[in-house]
Length: 458
Image 1: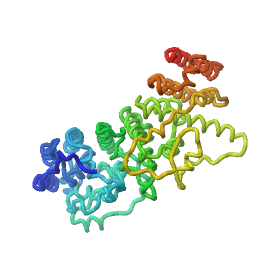
Image 2: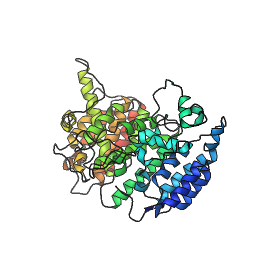
Image 3: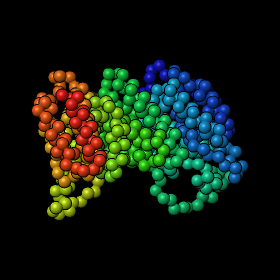
Image 4: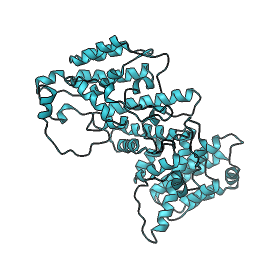
């Protein structure tokens, strides 16, 4: 994957001017120069690109003479602004080429950053920080607390040569880092902007709406020929975002989840196996689940995924309720190893998939998003034993999303069974059976809303 042919990397002389400013500790000057040099036809060199994200958190210290080479708060703020400016003027491919990624099977080359591509002047603070990119497998690693942090969170550097500094290091016991460090939120926001822009550009090129750059951040299968599925790292970030008090941080979780779901619109990302990773992480709180579902935008792919998600959740709840009457079942997170068939067999009615090895070309794969039969939908609505607030919320979203998809479909695409059930009143009867016998205020409100919508769908 290469930048747009209309773009070119800064010349060696231009890149050297920026690097020289960084190495001399003139960070504000270097960042300003980089911002001025870059344009829709000129993008930063890899070395320049490594250094700007390292400036984005605040790293001020006045404890040593060495600190004169540390970025100031003003440089930190300027770096964050420059990241957004670069996202506006340059293509996502040109900017993300400097960050670690997994190999692209289509060209046999690795997109990961290697040490040979990074600056070697470890006496420069930013250069030594940028060297750490070579130890990362993907962009999620650079968001962790142990990667981007303020200087107050780390030990003071020992003045002198790198060898002396290494002798002065002490071994400390560290806790597992947060998936998004406190100073890494601006970088996550920047990555999401680039992934969303890449997604739009891909759709504009008459392909499915997905981000190839995001797909490059998902590890390949062991055979490197099957569809990718192991989105554990970005899903950890999604649900870490949802736990935040700040609304803008929670919205980042919704954006990243939507981006991941859109990957399933191609044959390069396995929907059943991705769903296996997502289901065990769903929040137990009604309010949190409502926020997660409402954060999915109204595109066809996302709506069909929401239907599948609600269906899988209710089906799993029904199975667990039945099994709880007998022997207990192990509920550890599924870890699919033996291939696609295992995930498919868990719920053959929810998805369709193919055992054939997918081609590398990103073809639209709408077969993964086939809606369930209307009869299955009504069965899930009326099944007994799960009339709690969370299940009712999921039933509500399931029926609303399914109904809207059918209502907006072309006449030839509408389900005949669904239309017949609407006309004969079977859908309204199912709603009354599911919500009418409950005495709580929420169920009564949901029933009233659903009956009003059903009247408009007929």
